[in-house]
Image (cartoon, rainbow, N blue to C red; front, side, top):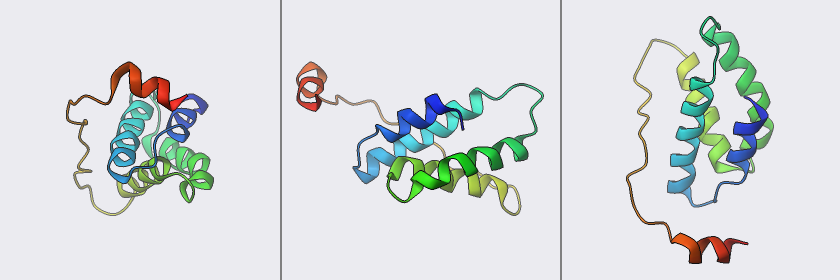
Length: 99
């Protein structure tokens, strides 16, 4: 897992539903950043090792770890990834309150 994606996940909110959305988007961002000729299994194990220490304290990172483990385990199955449904999240007022 690259440091940029991991740091974005660590700044994610703790709400379980939102953490799941952000974790899945983090996985997709990591996957899109892999080089074309990379070995998926090796890269996924490397990302899991990098993210695992943060999984207990951060729900978004825990979701990425869950997806990585599911992608590495057993027979090939659909991972059930989804982009978040579009909705307003508070705009400028919410961003100011977050600071």
